[in-house]
Image (tube, rainbow, N blue to C red; front, top):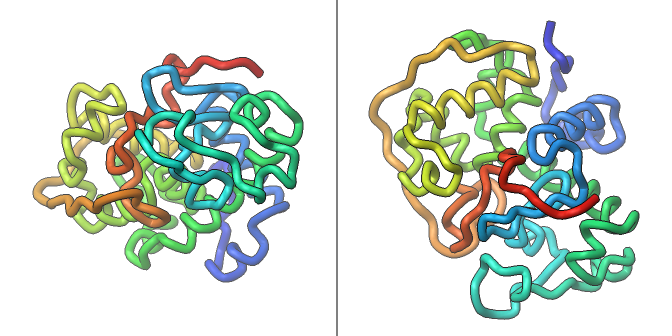
Amino acid sequence: MSRFPHIGYLGIALALWAGTALASDYADLIRTQESGGNYGALNTQGGTAAGAYQITAGTLASLGYVNHIGGSYGSWSNYEWTSLATVQGVTSLSGFLTSPAGHALQDQAFDTLTTLNLSALSTQTLGLVGQTINGVTFTESGLLTAAHFLGAGALNDWVASGFDPTVFPQSYLDANGFSSYAELQSHLMNRIGAASDTMYAGGTGTGGSFAQTTGFPGFGAKRPILIRETPPFQGERTSLGGTQ
């Protein structure tokens, strides 16, 4: 049986997402996948992914919590916290990672990001819900875990290609520590399957292409690499440091 019931109609999901039992269970799944539930986790391989959900500085900038003030997009020293964060008691990366206010802000940012990712999924991608492909049963929650990892736009591209992992550039493999597209495919499918307690049976698609964007991709776009930082895959706990 699926770990999560189907969300149902997209409009209802967007309106009722935050505060529901399903949202709580999904957030717990992502925290576990990304950081082992550690709100103090910080990527130690040169990226800015931080906190329980391993949200990057670039994503927090799109959400309005920080501003990039120049220099490398891959360094926290080049971001400042906005009034949207400071009014809630978060004025530094340390506070974001270690204070109760910071933990609450992480939850808030994740809820907003999840809602935006859900709204950015294509009709084709959402149409997978309820289908079982190569042993993996697709659910809304499973698709959202993939969108959190890839970015909703890249997930849509992968689905449109017939699940061909080569739609992603080589840089996706390099940044996330994968040695092959088959390894990336297996991780992605099992990440989706974790929400329905199903496992990937193997196999990949063929063909497809990847259209890169420039600058920070924003919501619904291709998440890693394109913001000139070296992110973790957001779930590689062995690359995380920090304190709770």
